[in-house]
Image 1 (cartoon, rainbow, N blue to C red):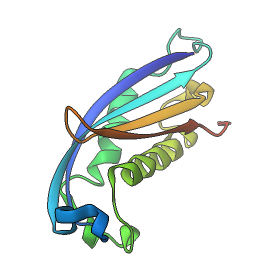
Image 2 (cartoon, one colour; image 1 turned 60 degrees about the vertical axis):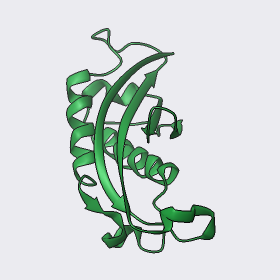
Image 3 (spheres, rainbow, N blue to C red; image 1 turned 90 degrees about the vertical axis):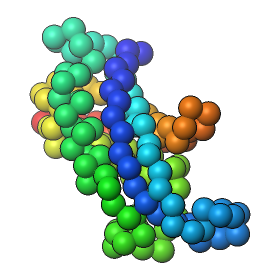
Length: 137
């Protein structure tokens, strides 16, 4: 399996509901370093996994929708704890839609798997990974 990883970051504010979160029940900030790994079993006709430039720009665009936001104020997250694990899945799903719509180029339809890792710090991170639906462009 071949893979390419691109990286960016975003900053948010949020709070959590539930005793398990202790002091994080209060409004606090987080800066996430995001690793997006794209995989495919065979290289495309150009000999690459995906255009790294397009993947980098697409990740930046997806993260811009979250950057500098108080997630407690976002209607799409009402009633949800926007944990690191939860946000990894949100980014995965949004990026999968971008791939399916052709946002990473003609040959990105050959991508088979993706992993989104949100690094909270140098000692803690969470991820979501899975197979990508077959794309037909």
